[in-house]
Length: 308
Image (cartoon, rainbow, N blue to C red; front, side, top):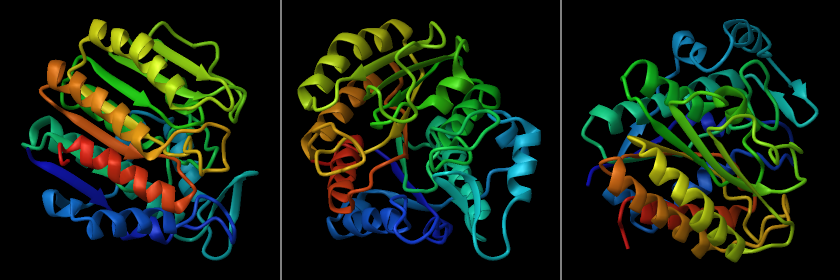
């Protein structure tokens, strides 16, 4: 199996202020862990290109893209919402983050690679068609999916989102698009305080009760996700890989462990092997307890690339 690892130095330069949980160290601790544990020895590394305006425009309103990029400061910070800010490097990092998803899609769809993991920030799944929010500017995975559908000609793809926060931006972009099935879990009644009612028939949203653990995740995957995915028969899987449901992460009240991330990834690998010729693109979303993030990503990537 050929597996790709995609990142960019700009991900470590975007910063939203001292003490902000979505910090540059998130990318660094993942890279260090994968290098130290020998995982990167089994992957080919790529620098993420910048996404083009045309690529971004398949998932976002062109006016929104232009206005967001025009807000980039030359010094200091510009607040986009109460939790989300731009520094002088944010626009560049956001363009490379979205570009990582496009490159991963190209490599996996027609470049001879079976799996790809994008270690990038800022994350993306809260970014709606015309709005930045929740630490997110461009919806990276949505840009990749639209590239797969509109440029590469795939007919059916699935988006799996296991971040502890509902991927409202992805739902906003894809609700009602019959070419996309989105399956997700998230903590109920947590930011962005929606998702319990799906916006379209192609959405399989499974809210999880606060203080539940990996047992609830496994029930959701087994009883809801897997039947929906098998009925849909996707040609490629995309993963919004958030690691903030971990029991060590104080951004939520769920109790997942490192092993839960390996387990859920194993289920997705089985689906991909059955219906998608093994093809999976995974894009980093949340995860803010740095040691737990690094360990959990290692479990995810090891399982993703069949390295046990």
